[in-house]
Each structure stands twice: as structure tokens, then as C-alpha cells.
Length: 137
Image 1: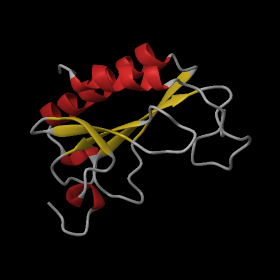
Image 2 (image 1 turned 90 degrees about the horizontal axis):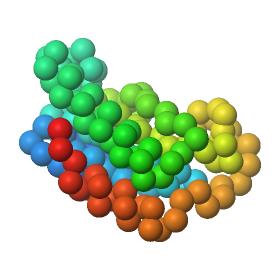
Image 3 (image 1 turned 180 degrees about the vertical axis):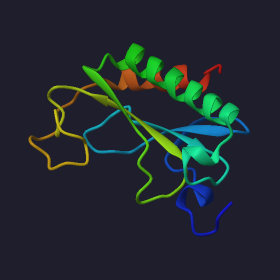
Image 4 (image 1 turned 45 degrees about the horizontal axis):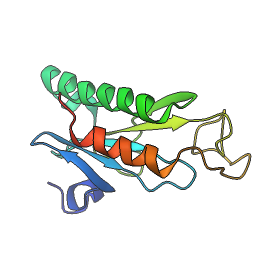
């Protein structure tokens, strides 16, 4: 644990699922309902800092989250990103994208091209949370 690392000292969002290795959070990103992050619990900066089996374990969680997001929210596309420029701690963004989202087709960190429109219902988000709580990896 690093005392000055946001992902070591906070959950990083709404905690949905956790085991000893990693956690899944639902991010509060305006215009991007269902944006999840898979966060490694141990403080590591780069994927190459993980052992091969740890990388596989982490990516299996990422792929399962992607599958569940697609199943529950039916987005046009999924973006997977592991940037860590602002928070140098291994984590993956699972970003559901719609053709009418604020930034499509650009990355969500680009300049917005339109206002956010409702893309998912509260029932869909509840289903997503329920499915993620019972993830098996």
C-alpha cells in the first residue's frame, strides 16, 4: 500500500465486488453509466510488474466484467483502457459506449461533442450491479 496513492487509500468508486486480489467498482462518470473499473488491490504501477499468472487473473476479471456490461447494458461498443497517468496504480476501465454518448466516436477523455443523453435505465444499472456482485472468476 502506498500512502499517497488514491487507489490504495480509497475504494476508487462504488465498491461492487472484491476478493483478495482485485475489486470492481462502478465509477461515477457523468454521461457514462455502467463505467466500471477493475482495480488491483496491491500497489503495482505497470502490468509488467505482475507475474504472468497475476496478469492472467486480472484480465480474466476484466473480460468477465466486459461480458456482463455488454449483457446488461447492450452498448454499441466497449472500450478497455489502462492508462494510469493520473493514478499510477494498475487498474482497467471498462467503458460502455453508445453512438449518442457525449464523446463518441472519440475517447471519453476528448472534448465532448454533444450533451449526455440517458442511455440506460435504473433497472439496467441495478441488473448490472447484481450480476457483478456474483462474478465468478
